[in-house]
Length: 311
Image (cartoon, rainbow, N blue to C red):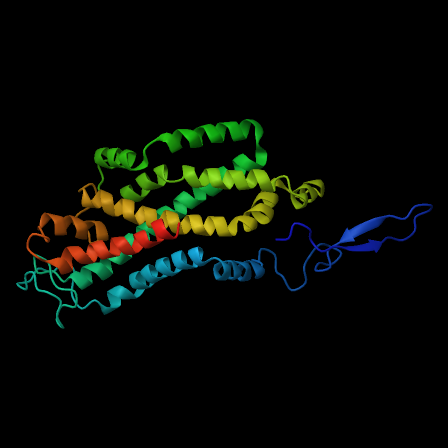
């Protein structure tokens, strides 16, 4: 959004000795409505702006491509999996072959089927936790940066408290003492510990944007605070929020896999973390089953490609 919207100066009828000028938006009628745009309809230029940001930002483009590939695997992978990932067979530790594309495990389970089904579980819960984390840090950052004063002091204090807490050790502690073991628990634990860093970034951007002319003009025209925050400030932070969501989602997937690898998740379910757990438990490296443990490590390295090189 441009900081100086296009306005036309239209003279009002002469009311005596003085003639006033009124600023009107050329895209709207005299009642303030934009022709052809229904109330509540998302402005199409937001999608166009997001696409332009992707084109000029190779790091963000790379992250979105990686996440997109995982999402495609999660959606269509189970449709091409030919075996039940939990079915036990006598084909123990078979290398990749036409029958088993990525080999089998120590219990005769098909690794390709586990990867496809496990991708759906890991990506889904990573997506859920990523949405929760993004919602928390966007609300906290925007509120703290826009209002300032006491509200900013309170939210900044809470953010700093969570920021100095070691995230993964805290997640280990919470996951160990929560009775229910499952992906939902892991997602909630990670969501509670993964938002402070991004909240500080959004707060800094909000503090800077609050001083700009178009925000002052919106305040002077009587626009509500909610509209200023979510319709004026939020669209200008779309690139930061999108990049933060991609990074958060991948971090959540890795953290969830780490917790499940340590046995703090539901190891009976099929996910990337449980694949790591059973590969380590079955001594895949010692038995030379490179296709079992190596595939899990390759998936981890693919995610690291974004987190370290393209952060």
